[in-house]
Image (cartoon, rainbow, N blue to C red; front, top):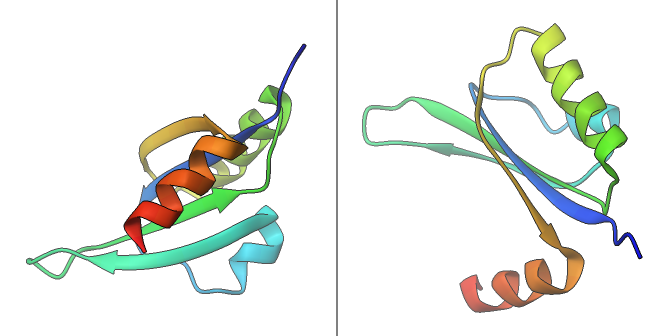
Length: 85
């Protein structure tokens, strides 16, 4: 049986909160490193592979370079979130 995955995409640059609805993400935040360079992390609702490809294509179409993409089951993401809080 196929289980939808939660997707975490990190991109170079800073996106405002207004983009969260456009991408249909559950949460989004911006981090800056020691040099002051920003990256934005997007956490999706559980998605299938086609939705993931669509999100990556939207980011690419906006010229936003992807730093990393990872998929996890919804349950393991919730556990990691609890640990980090």
